[in-house]
Amino acid sequence: MDQYKTKFVVVYLIAAIITAACLLMNGPMRPGLPLDNTVIMRMEFISENLALWQWSWIAWMFSALGLLVFLYYFSR
Picture 1 (cartoon, rainbow, N blue to C red):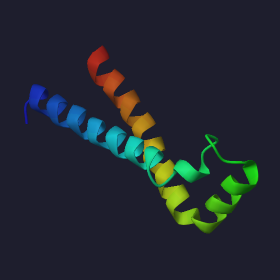
Picture 2 (picture 1 turned 60 degrees about the horizontal axis):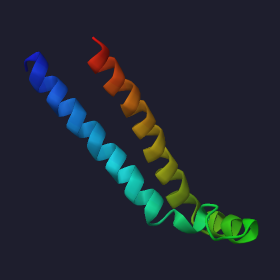
Picture 3 (picture 1 turned 180 degrees about the vertical axis):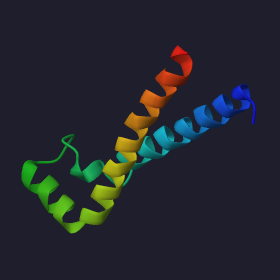
């Protein structure tokens, strides 16, 4: 693959990861966030949905890593 096609694929992959993380944050993770819930409600949700919570935060970590890769590609 040439350089521009590689950048194109990487940028869209990063955008897909960030979109997935945002959808997880706005959907299934919402009851565990400090928006309208008390600390007790949040802790109950997280303890009952621990795998979902952990996988959602892994998605967020990949989106942060994706932003670093994005900046690296476009700083060159």
